[in-house]
Image: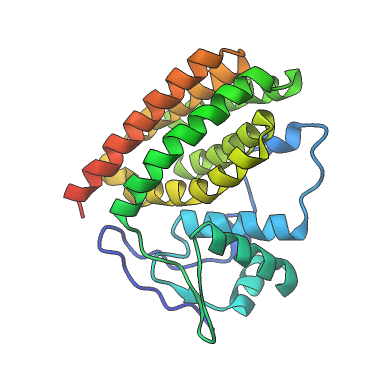
Length: 251
């Protein structure tokens, strides 16, 4: 049964498509996969990655209701891994579980996003500084690759590649920071932040600028520049906060 879609007032409804046509064909090898110690993704991790991208890139738009069976068919992954991925997405506020009624992709709330940013700034600054200090040589090499690829995505105005790079960068920061408590806090904020940006960036954000700011953080971490990573992260979040506030006048 296809999902019911409703249109958020600040975005066009995008009809959901099968994950195999877009979400499962990345333009480049995932940066995290370049780390030798990285284990192959489990089915649950694959289901989570596909569903998160479908939600973030509005292929499952705000207001969409779906079933567990539909998401299993959409991803081509069995229901048990999909169910586990749904639980994680629910913890991250990207899916609402409606008892006896299915699953809902929630609408977007600007005020909630601003509250999220206030929390994100403090936690993510700590994570980026910790990553700059504690990253291994191999991880620093991947951060340098990501910095260059952010610039490339901005130059090509490639929003999907940017979203994928952002997820890879965030994951690598969490690995390199080596702090499970900060990791738990940040995981609840990343997906919501990416979705909000994707919804509004064509109206109010500059993709090349956003990509350059992300690249500056990745470069500072690659270089082991702890204070530089903190400053670059603050510049990035200043831009994101300004962008978020500007959407109030566009919705």
